[in-house]
Length: 431
Image 1 (tube, helix red, strand yellow):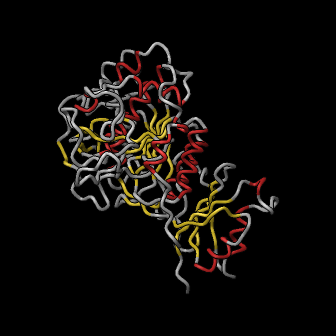
Image 2: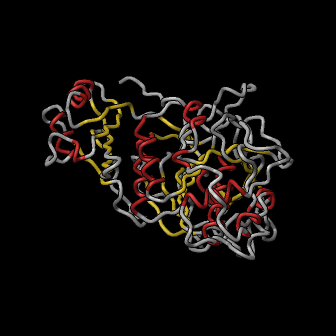
Image 3: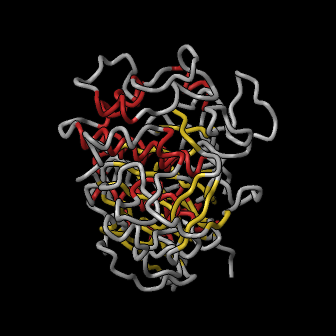
């Protein structure tokens, strides 16, 4: 039997296809070897935390049925891939590359340090550092939907259950978005651990949490799962996506869905990565995707003294920075612990964005971005640099903004040629 590879098939928009009346799944099935069983799952259903049947190891994938991002993930043989590449309805076929949670995968130096449960309700140092507690008199994030694309969330954790609303798993072999590692639960606690008189408090303690499981119990996944997860977020009215994951080599389909999410009004925040073993020259970058993208807010990590963390990635694509060293938060099974890295810097920014959006209900994602970028604590630096971006998010200043600032910070989709030059073309592995 021929070896199968996980691939992403991006179709042309339907009105540009020669066979406009033929569904893209029919086109994929037509390319399959005779007798091959194929199951494709709508990336938007089932919703509301409903378990899905286990995805087996035959040809399976997700169907992202969106005009500007018509994508199908599948496991195909080389012959089937060639058949689709020669189909005039298909824009490209590329490898569905692996991704990992920032701080896991090839970076084993960052791990959880478990702590005893706080004796009384505690505001972690990172939450104070972004001045979230000074913003709560104006906004606590109520009504803003934040999706955590990660290893899942322990929805029963006493600090999270009040704000947990919904979720779905896109990881084969799983049926619920329950966290089987801890990374996603930790990030969720940073964003929206509730004020309940015990445990810890998150940046936006009344924001609504949504678990979108796109990483497995080893903190690994495929970008096709994240693409399906982002599509689910667009269909379910999510405002902010927090992605503490990435990789240096990605399919172009990922940028397509991120651009689509921005155009649909969502704000995506992503950790820049933790692989800065050596100083990076100013003209170079080791920021991971999707944080590199123009339509994604890339976040670096700083310590409690507002100094860039030694492990944080750096580059021209860094937009903002946030606390990311020894950050205390929630872990599954009513546990607590600390974690370091851009994994936990990212949810600080997502939480502050929730506070801003709740304070400015009529705002667009572009306006929220402008508020975040124009009210930063600039850490004594002038302008934007490759380590800190514009600076550290300042929740108090952001929610107190009486009017949206003028568009000094260009729209994310037109952020400037320097981002295009720095990021370059996304790498497309040959399959």
